[in-house]
Image 1 (tube, rainbow, N blue to C red):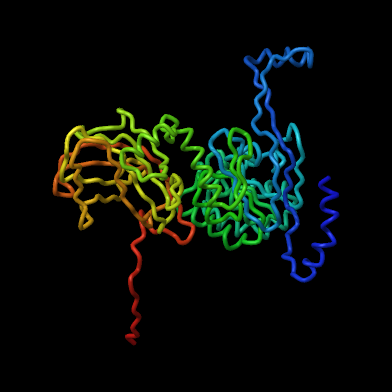
Image 2 (image 1 turned 45 degrees about the vertical axis):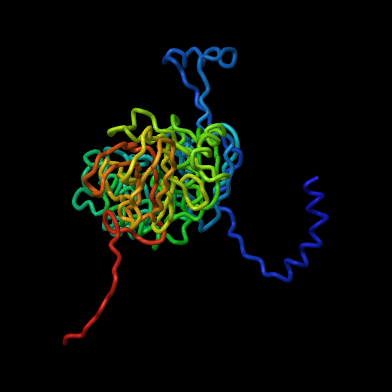
Amino acid sequence: MVQAAIGTTRSQSSQALEAKPQRLVAPPAIEVSGVSKCYQIYRKPSDRLKQAMVRWKKKYYREFWALRDCSFILRQGETLGIIGRNGSGKSTLAQMIAGTLSPTEGAIRVHGKISALLELGAGFNQEFTGRENVYLAGSVRGFSRKQVGDLFERIVEFADIGDFIDQPVKTYSSGMYIRLAFAVAAQVRPEILIVDEALAVGDVFFQQRCHQFMREELAGTTKLMVTHDLNAVANHCDRAIVLHHGRMVFEGKPLDAISYYTRISHTEQFGGGTASSQGDLRSANSSGIPEGETIPWLDVGEEHRGGAGEVLIERVAIVDPNGESVRTIQPGDSFSCHFQVVTPVPKADLIFGVTIYDRFGKAICGDNSLSLSDGRIAFPEPGRYVVRLDYTWPELQPGEYSATFGVGEGLHPLHHTVQCWAHNLVAITAISPRRAVHGLFTNPVKDMRVHRVG
């Protein structure tokens, strides 16, 4: 039926195509069609022997499907990111594409020579020296000894491991190991480069060099990146795929994929706090939320609250201008922090504020309502109130952050009575795809002058 429908419209659409130039579509580099991978999990080693003896008559194992029905096309010259939580099937998929694993179901077609940098140590002989492993890796990739010899100095220079090149790789640190492995994988100028979390091992200078090399020297190379580094996905990738519990749940633009991934990962991680039910929303509407406005509230449990307690934070939310929960954010994005609070007595001189913390628990930035000319807030009678603070995300280093909401009472922005703090409730992933962030945050250049003095 689909083919017939296409046939009836082909003559009509062909005239439009002739009048409008077509954009050339690059041929596929990797085609993944309905791929699944199942592992047999045995309770004890002897069960493997029993299974080999009885074959299909009885199962001494349970099936674990690491990947289910995954399909996509990666075209030549594209960079595709694969993200997902640990155990979602990312590395299994990368290994099947690289050819080190076979799919249980489905098919993978690769059009081009692959250079894969998978888990640390893959492809190297521990007893060989770095030099010997360079030639071994080159021969595995189909290069002659002379071709590897022509590339050898560039590989050694990129790896920057000095005299260790002539030492057995079993004596290498993890950083030295990955330096040499990436140098080999990248310098052979592959048609397809697969990188699975390898760049997370090296130091920051090596990571910078690798990212620059992929961006500049390998600009036209087809690349598949399996990573937890969401900023790398935002900066390098043309498209991204999200895997969740072994299934492909999203494919699209990198920023959309990152937003989707952070949403599902935070939902799992902070499952205790969920969006309000309709009943809760009706109650809130009668307590100060404008009619028709719905907020993706997160309930505040007692374990997250501290302070004098005369004003209690019941629920909080961080939303974007569209009213949706903020999971991913970049410099310049507007966002609003909502408090739902309750007080049994009238209150004057209340202060509302939000502090952003990094993954080490260090306070990075924040501000409260006293920064505004009319920032003093009063609740003239007991009841439930909703307060909203509007912010713009600063040029912070990409990474994971959390938000703490606070209500104080007093007239000084730093010295006042803490009525209630809701600690580390909302998680936010910061990215910076538009420009680099230097240090913890960027202090923008305001002016520049050049004078000739000689």
